[in-house]
Image 1 (spheres, one colour):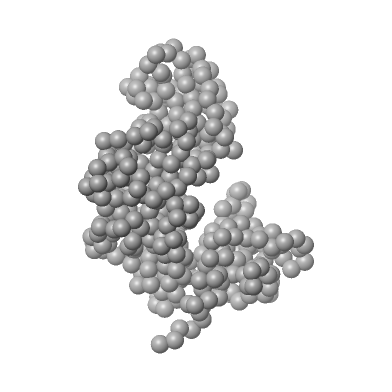
Image 2 (cartoon, rainbow, N blue to C red):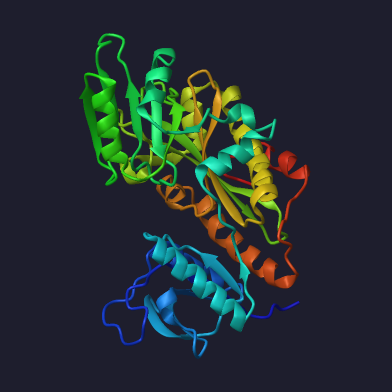
Length: 399
């Protein structure tokens, strides 16, 4: 049975040349992702374009968007979308409000489905997951950072130190590790990454000086406090496992891919934007654990990802894709480090996992069509069968 054409609009917070009278070369903020979706959509009878708030005229209801054709992006008048894939990363509160207002105004002209929901603050996500007894054991203890007095109380009982990270941060920016070295008990050592993602190291003689420096470093941004966890490979490189879950053409959660991100030996983080590299998850786990344990851990990671996805939907509404970052101690102890509702795909490309990179695109398009084929509920879950399906043995990223 032939499909009717549907329209998928990819929303960016800002788009160079987003208005027809703006000079300059057109290029979306995530050109590789937008191009891949545009090319793959041609066989699925889906019209794909990229738009931003500046391209919408609320008075007339017209929308200008960028379409990819013949190897180039062209700005043109486009129909209002049936489905919106929000890839906006607003840098200011005003930009965030503008994105929300435009989507609301567009919806008044023509109803559209949101391909993905949004997650609240990291603390609210943590609190929701902590209340689930099956997930709670995999969460590092987390609390808002309030004052240097917290560190004074905690550090004596945490020989590995503590971690401070922005409550709304990403890409490892602003990550801090604070410890009292065993061989230098009169020093407070801070290692981490600046807001520009540059590595640094500082030393302080007392908590008062450290507190003043932290106040300057953090500004008015809220930070979260966690115990430091030894999440490093056998050759002392920081690493984590990134898992991408997406809903398929039937609206069911599936693992589209998993990859390991390896940081440099002198780094505290494994993020690709901070100089890390991506390799296959199976190979990395196999290099750090026995074959049977590596297979068990990957199955556990995939199964836990399914449980977390269901819990997030129970708490915050429907999602179409979610990414999770997992850390592993040398003993095999597993930790859920991050959840992400606007995941990237670069790890799969770098790892050479063409299957995962392809699924990350096609499943998104298939789910967009699924959303228009029926009245999608505000909350879509796959029940307990999702946990069993996601924990099946997999070869690398095979679902």
